[in-house]
Length: 187
Image 1 (spheres, rainbow, N blue to C red):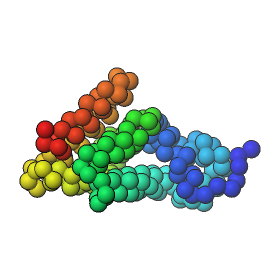
Image 2: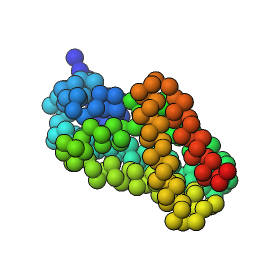
Image 3: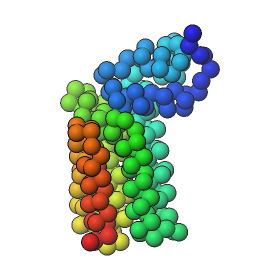
């Protein structure tokens, strides 16, 4: 029998890994509620429909990423090398340790051509990812060049995540992160 007491935050945390690996289209509300150990009717208490659930998941992932990423890069107590080291650790935690890669890219690839309902949330995530990298790059690069390089890094990292998933080999993401470090340090 499914448990009944759970918070909205607990539900969101439990559906993230499922959505990351199975995707939006292959995850039904029934399956998601079962994975959370709650009845489907209780699931609808928190989310009126699947679209609302996905938007909240994307918002939570975005919020988590922003909080941790900007806490690192805007720190006054860390030097640039420490910021890079901590950023690499965050990327490894988010993109490598969690099965399925990047939930934002996965959701974009799966849904953008069918129904761009999540496009705003996905764009905000990538905008902030690029802006944060641009902030780090501006230490050693002109602002216009820093933006171009930040966009390039995000493209490289997302490509690395994709190839890591395709080949079951983390070297692709590792190499993208190494290239990111070299660009930030202007080596």
